[in-house]
Length: 182
Image (cartoon, rainbow, N blue to C red; front, top):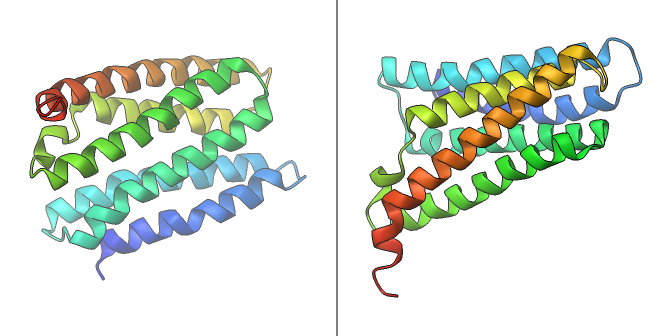
């Protein structure tokens, strides 16, 4: 067990805390939930940075890090869909969650084919993730109808657009392998 893996486990432990804070009926609960999500987002960047910098990448971390990221984002988006109760948030949330399922399956399949590197994270994926985290933070921190919440929804739409773009890039890279036996 190393520090990057501990940070990933902390991010997973934050998930039930986020849900509890989200439903607490206190004025401080949503800002606190937003801060918790923000800390989790920072650990997402920090654990990968430290693993590379300190040469502490492990198979456990390589498996668990993307799982932690996807769980945190999917659960936060599900909570926000309920809270905002509008297609303006539901549509990009479904695009983001659906893409994560497709790309996870594609990465698993490509790994079985020995071509995992063809679906490695790109700069578009990094920008998409950053915008997702910023938008989710904003949407947790500010209630529906607040002007800043509108910025969060717009940012989520941009993230969803990048999500589709990166999915198309990954599928194009994998297409020759996917259609080889058609």
